[in-house]
Length: 418
Image 1: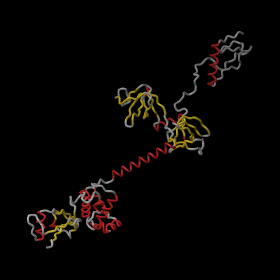
Image 2 (image 1 turned 90 degrees about the vertical axis):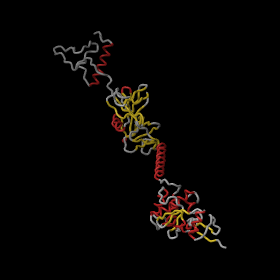
Image 3 (image 1 turned 180 degrees about the vertical axis):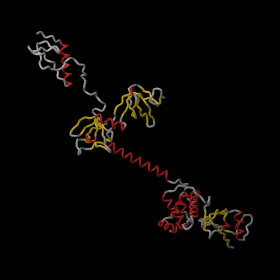
Image 4 (image 1 turned 45 degrees about the vertical axis):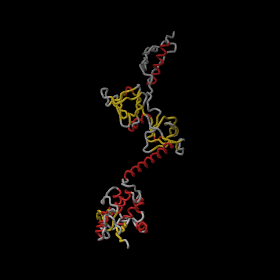
C-alpha cells in the first residue's frame, strides 16, 4: 500500500507523540497497523469474525506547550548568608581553610561551584567557600531579601520622575538617573519607594525600572581590620570631643596640675575657713593672674617672690602631698569658672592682723580681709599723718619712710632717724 504521510504529517505526529509522552498518556492501540499500511486514527481493521478493536487512546493532535521548564528567576545561581553574626569566607571547602573574608547576614553572591556541603561564590572582589548550612538559595532568598531590604531598582529610561506619593498626580520631588541603582524601601501596586539620598526618598513607576535582589558584598579581612581601626579612631575622637566639651571653661588658662597646685595653696591659706572664705582666696589668685603683675600663670603667681611665704618655706609641699579638701577643690574650680565674691581685690590679710584704716576699700570674707591699698601721694601721706599723729606739709614727707608688704600690700610707717 502506498505511503501517504507527508513531511508535515510526520512532524505533527512526532510533536503529538512527544507531548503525549510528557503528559504520561498511552498513545498506541493494542493492534498496530503494518508500517506500509495507511494509518488513520480510530480506523483499525478487525480480524475476520471479530468486533472492531476499540481504540486505546486518541492520538489526535493536541495544543500542548513545549516549554514546560520554569522561567529563569532573579534568585537563580545566588546564595545569601542567613546568620545571626558572621559567616567566614574560606579559601577551601573546609573549616580548616584560610579565612579570606566575612559575610554578614544578607551578604552573598553568584554561585561558582558546590561541593561536599559547601558553596563557592563570587562576592565583590572576593571568591571563596561558604558552608551551606548557613546559606539560602533560590526562592528561599526572597523572604530574607524583603526582611533586610536587599532589593534595588535600576532605572531603564534616561531619567525617571520621583514622586512624593505613588501616583502620577503627585508632586515630583526629584529625578532618578538612567542605569543607576536605588535601594527599594517598599513595592506596591506598580510603584516602588526608593532611597534617593540618606535623608530623602520617593516613588517611581516599576514600569520603567528593573527590580532585583542585590546581596551585600563579602568583606575582606584587610578591609574589616581597617574598618575596625577607623571605628576605634572615630570613637576615640568622639570621646576626646566629649571630654573637651565637658571640661570646664575657665576664665584663665589652667591645666589639671595647676588646678591642683592652686587648690593646695588655697588649702594652706584658708583651709579652715568656710566655703566662701576659700572661694575668696581662690579669686585673689585668679585676679593676680589676670593682672599680669606677678606673671601670666597660676604657677608664676603662687611662686612669685614674697607673695605666699609657704610656697618657698616648704609648707606648700606638705599640702600638695596631703591634697586639698573637696570643699577647697570645689571653690577653686568655681573661681576658675568665673564665680567671684570679692571683685577685683588683689590682696588679703587675716582679720586679726588687718589694718583697716590703711585700706582705701576692703571686704571681709571668712577669716580674711580683702582690700585695696592707698597709692603714695598727698592724700595717702595725709592719711598716714593722721594715723600716726605726724605732720606732712603739701604732700611732702621727708620725715617718713613708707614700706609696703608685697605679699599683702600692707603699708607700714617708719620714722627716719635724725
